[in-house]
Amino acid sequence: MRILVVSDIHANWPALAAINEPHDVCLCLGDLVDYGPDPGECVRWAMDHATYAIRGNHDHGVAQGIPVTGDIGFRYLTKVSRPSMWDSLAPEERRYLLQLPVTRRVTLAGKRFLLVHATPRDPLDEYLLKDPEIWARRLQNVEADIVCVGHSHMQFNLQVEGTVVLNPGSVGLPRDGDPRAAYAIIDDYRIEFKRVTYPVEATIARIEAMPWSQRAKEMMQHALRSGRLPGITSNPDALADVESGDDLGDYPDTVLESPE
Image 1: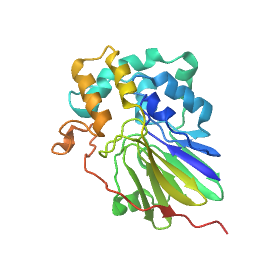
Image 2: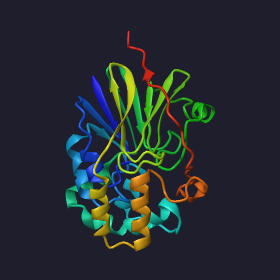
Image 3: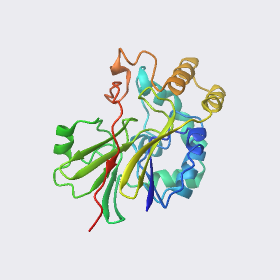
Image 4: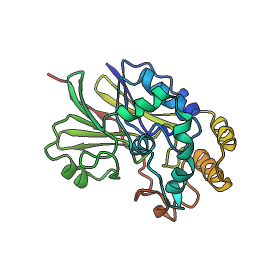
């Protein structure tokens, strides 16, 4: 079984459309909306292609009409872009966001999967990178072979006492210094990280046409072209939701044990 794992698409349709991977099952880990110019296309793609999908914090915020305050980093970009999200969605796309579960369990190819956007303790908002000690605490009493998470926009996998934590990175707005769309493939019990180049300038052209502030447009242009916000290396606090701008580096693929 070949499993496509995507997360953090953020209304960037050209990035999502560039993923052309044969697969049997698609897992979508949330955050279809906010930041980008094309939420409808991305939600519709999930409706048509995601075998199992869950809600991200941005999906929740858009679906519930939650306003955002703040004038730095990605929080500012959320504040600017969110008002245009709901109006851009068709009624059935809005209903899809509203009904997305916060967590989901599924068994695939003999492996128990837990899908959660952030962490099992705080499915929507807790921000956690590749820290084995903290993840070990978060995975206590979590019965799963593979925990699939998003939220940090950075690819990593981690073996924690028999459980694999997999983050496929962000399709629409990577934050690790590599602007290419990021995702993961699980094939024959092997996890492989993937990146694909997409027409970034097409997304930027669409952003230029949005009724957003010039500051927000310039921030998004920089983030899309560079894979991080301006000044983020020296000012990690510019990331919203207590998010860090540190690089994670590259990690080897994880090979999963085949079921007996």
